[in-house]
Length: 164
Image (cartoon, rainbow, N blue to C red; front, side, top):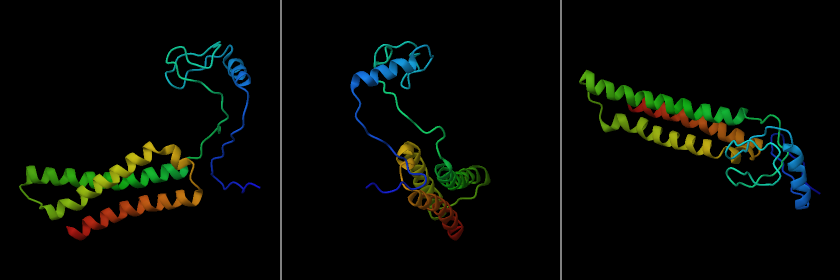
């Protein structure tokens, strides 16, 4: 017996269909419709094969959610972006003060925002690249990532204010 699916968990069904049936269903779907190829955007209207004539990618017909649940993903992105924006602003301010104000901040003052910018920026980059992975995690795990993103941003600000 399969375990019940948790709220927000992505489900996928793998069932075998004969290739001829899959191709027929794909042909029926694109028949008379301007459906763009997901790879290159070429119109697949009246296509008679399972490959895009423009880019050559294999095409499959799938069932997908009408509206993806993205609240926790967006909350994670915003959490990391807040810290990244704060630390980037501090670094820009430090450069402006050093150039125009004549005041020199040492490595001790510049290190926390510089390190935080690199770490938060890297985390944000990985999160954006791994969007599908994020969507497939359980809700509790996603909530933990959201809390971690916001905690990392808050910690970077606290580190800066403790040093300066």
